[in-house]
Length: 313
Length: 272
Image (tube, rainbow over all chains, first blue to last red):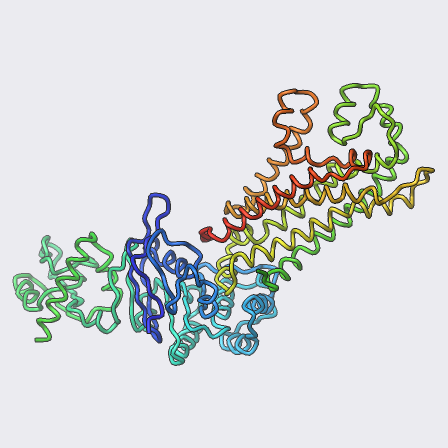
């Protein structure tokens, strides 16, 4: 079952287009990472899904209902944590959550108590006195307290310490175990890699990748580290298959998207001290998508697919 | 159409300012009544010696100094006093911008509007609060006059029923101010800009009203001034209900409120 579905979604701010024909189709029961740097269009997409923004063109659906016309019914089953969460400073944590429960017309007391204990948040204090991390915990509780079918979290752990992050990840894993779904926007590639089943990568308002983590890792891409004997022996021209991510002293770090034989043939002609070929982590993939022109990115994706087939044969 | 949670929170948060303004209004009107009884006649005889001051007095308070002025008529001038208007409007403007533009600016609208509630429910629920405050504050001068008469030693019988019509006229004016504020609050994303714009409209209204006796050109555009539909002293003097004036003010209030409702239902909510 599709839980989120968008079709040719576009959003303009004046003459500036921030979303270009975004087609999304998220299946139920998945934890999907939503990646992209600032200005890529992640928050705009999320805000359209939640009815805070109207798309310029295209359609957005959640649970098969239109986000434009069935917003209230959709939002009853959605929990949302904004990236920059703001609360009413004069209310206590408890009063804030009671207010949200009242507006939702749902008694969430038991779940509030459980979540507050799990996230170690004192609810009797005024929100004004909360630290940024505590406010983020309060935001997480308000998004989870009604046990929504879909959770949309915009950088939910940016202000949390590592121990608390683990608690939040465990809670999200429990949500998935219940058959519910999570759309998780983050800058932290490590988090997304650790937690998510699938990843959507957005660049300049366009989806450049939407795949499962495993498929992405299984792509022909390899992380390559080349250590040269001396800086002078480092080549100025590199093969088209090699995307340099880092260049430091006598060392190149990059991703290789072609046949390994070609890499080895090329390396033979170089004066190197060391060669390391690894499976790429998500940050390598992400940087690959984000460096170079859009044309190059598309080209790289097209190159990697046939090689995957070649490898399977 | 209505969300109790939003209504309750907005009412609770506004209740202290509404209560303070109500007490302030009553206290001021009591003082006004007392001052008018002791100094009103002397003030009028002083003003009548200067034609320019006479015109200013007529326009600002609506009292024709040349004719005979009863104490009842003088008391009605409290409705047009700057202090009374300021107290009432400050609360109405603050309450009507609290959610629609205040929460957008503060960033809390991101949470409120992603709850299972229609935007029109939020708008109606918060509108009810400013409408209740407008109603309460519009009748506070009436209460002040009633309390003030206990401290007044006069042979003239002060009939409180005569002040119901000016209080209703004041209510219509306050609803128009609230409607205009709601509309701008839904069209704009900054609370300070909204409040500034409403203050500018009220100020221009007062300027038009004030300049009318001095400049003939102003008479042609006088209908644009909200304050030209608010004549409490004339109402008390003539005893005629201001049906036409009230209708105009209510139409302005309703139209602006509806425009605000449509704008709020469709507006893009920016990040704070």
